[in-house]
Length: 185
Image (cartoon, rainbow, N blue to C red):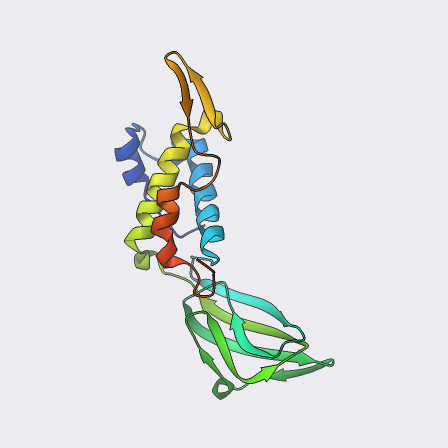
């Protein structure tokens, strides 16, 4: 992944790490990627701006809303509708780019829709809430990396209880404003 939700410098300062690069801490590199995947899953969207091809199937209920994962949409290269083994390539005047994906001007049913587009965020567009959420979650997981999945840990002073494996509640709260527009809160 080339998009960076949290910088090594921020993690280094917070965690008191002494080495110069994230590659000096292989487990941290794994956690950074893992946290990004968890955040994207929670948000229901892919964050890194990239060229994408996404296939959406419309069933019996007619629809014109095509939800795409890589929002915000930067450009749409093509929209192809397949119905009864016939392909129709839509003109750019047959749809609008919306915050959730593409809105077709005509409702379709029993169709396959293939959208080729560029979408997602540039590295310099990462909202502060995503940065802070990634920082908190990565730091939390780094500190607990030796007990992944444990909800309680024995220490010299007794027992310590931790939240179940998953995104922290505060991280989820911070991420709610960045969810895909069609994702139920």
